Amino acid sequence: MPITLTTTDPDFEARFHDMLGAKREDSTDVNDVVASIIADVRNRGDAALVELTARFDRLELSPETLAFSPAEIAAEIERVSPEDRAALTLAAGRIRAYHARQMPENVRWTDPEGATLGWRWTPVEAAGLYVPGGQASYPSSVLMNAIPARVAGVERLVVCVPTPDGVVNPLVILACQLAGVDEIYRIGGAQAIAALAYGTDTIARVDKITGPGNAYVAAAKRQVFGRVGIDMIAGPSEVLVIAEGDQNPEWLALDLLAQAEHDADAQSILISPDRALAERVVAEVERLLPTLPRAAIAGASWRDYGTVIITRDLDEAAALSDQIAPEHLELCVEDPETLSNKVRHAGAIFIGGYTPEAVGDYVSGPNHVLPTARSARFSSGLSALDFLKRTTIAQLSPGALAAIGPAAVRLAASEGLTRTDFRFRLGSGL
Image (cartoon, rainbow, N blue to C red):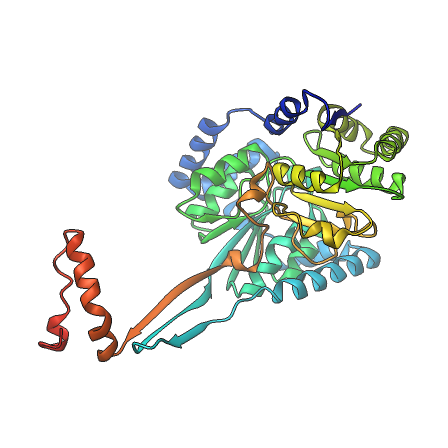
């Protein structure tokens, strides 16, 4: 059973903050192991990748077989059913169209002093995408990471996907093709992140690394950050549903369970001013749980982290949601648009009872790579902008330099810097 909190209870604040502070992610310290793997790949390159892949994925490779060949890619794609191909193609098209609208404009203007100012956007040259392999392989993650990079104009796009025992999900390979990926390597773990960051004889380094992974992948991304850019360090997934009135309790229960079945550390939260509705939703969750193929995982998530909060009204629900800053926020209320305008912190908002979060994971268009663990307070989901750099531009005319240069000289002198006198450019004009 989930924990149930009521905002009118005298101990609510203490229990609510205990919930906010609960640590759900794996606390295993893998930093030393990851550091040694990164050092090994830096020192031995392809040889380290081959050895580590044999050890961890039980797959014997050579530098020549690290990458999928064109023939292998074509053979894997042939294994995909027409129905799955159609669904993935639909998703790719919608994701591409959504992210194309995010592309910013280059801007220049001339101010009254005669200075031409502005900025321009340019893509990173190469990006690397990590895709989990084995049972936890997600073709949707390929689309959500690779398509924004392509929309941004990234010239070279590389995917690393582990293939334990040589097994790969053919949908992952098809997703790579649909997204325009250039190279696909069958390596995983911290060693793949190291190869992307530092390069080997076979794998050229990239400028930015994105994509989900286990504790070793997350630690590796932390350790190579600065050498390359990264998207984020994501924790366990979460959904918060705010509901009221005559919403369908079975639908709400399914939305909570859809998140719970991702991971035993995932969290599903229901907030409602309607206690009777909340009780019906909890009853539906308990009824539906045993019917799920991943009932053990969903059950552990619901038991350990499931939460129900009864509020005075929807305004209080929105305020609590902002404190939680959820990755996914569903607004299943009579006037969801008005309520959405009262929310400041959320990775993604799903408005209305016909917009389940699960659709957003695949085909609605917005990105499903979103900030977790309350980081929506200060960060955003993955977008085309994450693969762009903004360069500022300034061009001064002689008149502009004469107008604003003396202030620069004055300010530089106040900081103890004296080599910023611009009079040599304009003779005695300053």
